[in-house]
Figure 1 (spheres, one colour):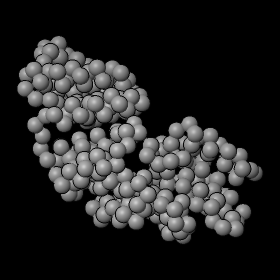
Figure 2 (figure 1 turned 45 degrees about the vertical axis):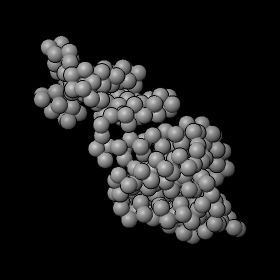
Figure 3 (figure 1 turned 180 degrees about the horizontal axis):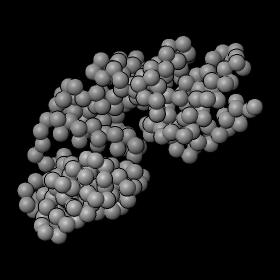
Length: 273
């Protein structure tokens, strides 16, 4: 309990010492193992975290006769952080084989689709089936609706995608990524620059660290017919902000090295003194 209190207070070194001691006393203390893995993850040592989460799940299966879903979800997250997307997907699939509540099943199905999209395992009908099942298990899962919107967007059904993004916002009006999703379609597919800017503004209002919103708002300024050079300052500010943030891996142009190169070229063009 003391270790958990330290963890809650972000005193991770002290918490780790307590969890280490707890495991010396009882090597099958799965909760101590889980927290130890979480601390490794927070410290950025994802390989060590993955090894610990595997231990947590093994203990849980041995002692409790069931998989430790928290450990598997955390393990998948660490795989994600080191770009081992296929291992992340397989870890989630392992979790889906357990005896789960509706909400957990929904969460895992949604994660599975997310990693399939990242790993370019794109089979539209199968993805839709998994997401529709996730939504049926938990109708309030805005993450599931968001990914379903993405799938329709990738399929070119933009009106359906926008409708789903709006359903996401009906459940969670502060979900910044949904505003970006709508704005992205408006600017790149419909040339609706005015409404796209409104949605990127809303995305930023709800999440000041949304790289994609800054990036695509800057792109919208550039794409407005008869580009006004007075927008250079706004474009420059947004590109610079985006460069220092983390992007949405499911959005074209705003994530990864290619996006960084594109941003550097825009900075050179629009941020001249």
